[in-house]
Amino acid sequence: MIAIVDYGMGNLHSVSKAVERLGREALVTSSREEILAADGVILPGVGAFGDAMRNLRETGLDAVVRESATAGQPLLGICLGMQLLFAESEEHGTHEGLGLLPGRVAKFRGDYKIPHMGWNELNFEQPSHPLFAGLAPGYVYFVHSFHALPERPEDLLATTDYHQPVTAIVGRDNVSGMQFHPEKSGDLGVALLRRFVELAEGGKA
Image (cartoon, rainbow, N blue to C red; front, side, top):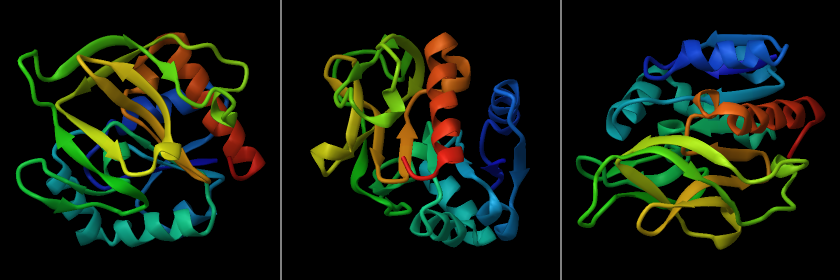
């Protein structure tokens, strides 16, 4: 069973349906007990970083997500959910994140269209990572105005190019994140989500 954290901000329906289409049970929940009992945890997110962190703190789910990660449960952040894994964001001021991965989230800056929106090709920076087993790089769908800057190069699993290298997938031990929406990213997105679920069923990535 995969727990999808319900903190009032996120593409809960599309993520849960995507997990169910993989033949697995998806439980949208804000219950600590249900989250900690799951094989894996998905932290979705749509909206502003500061609002998301406020909702997580007010519901106590920030502590639950940290507890889940510390306990070794496979955790996947999607879109804003990936950004929340980092220490801080500069979106509409400076906001503290979950701090599960060192680094920060910064706004795109340059003379080009923002948000970054559309299909872009992934580059596997660490092709031997278990998340990529049996997969080849391809195109996935992005919609974001802010991008993550991991502090540790080894946490950067995949990038894309949007006038600069852009963080697309991050991961360390049981914690991972995808800036794009795998459930809206065609065959490769579904395959990556399937790999996360398979790794969750088998334990740590």
